[in-house]
Amino acid sequence: MDPINVIITFEAKPERASAFAELMNQVKQSLPSADGCRGVQLFSRSDNDCVFTLVESWASKGQHQAHIAGAVASGAWDSLAKELACPPVSVIATSFEGVSRGRGPCRRKSAASTAEKYFASPASKRASGG
Image (cartoon, rainbow, N blue to C red; front, side, top):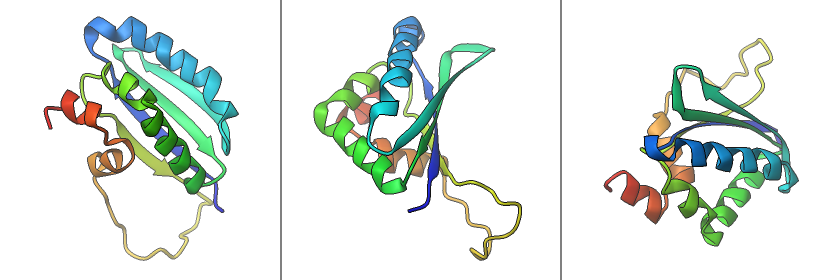
């Protein structure tokens, strides 16, 4: 199992930015107790009060996926998604060791497709008009 970092950027609806900030602080406090979560950092943009970025460290991709599946199943994701102006953008990153890891030619996946894979839910689809 290789550890991963998940970097997720959210944009709250302007009228919900304050409430969303509180929700993000709750996530920052509670997420480290999730199985496999190694830590969480929360950032806000200095030029836009509606934009927040979570940087999550996980023991494995599977444990992160299990956490997301649980959040979707419990309805927690729907509660968060209804506060958003648009779907979040997420990136999974692994530690860079400074040398090529022999994965072949550069490949690029769109950030939107990655976010949709992990965060697609009926509420997020409604929020994005989908």
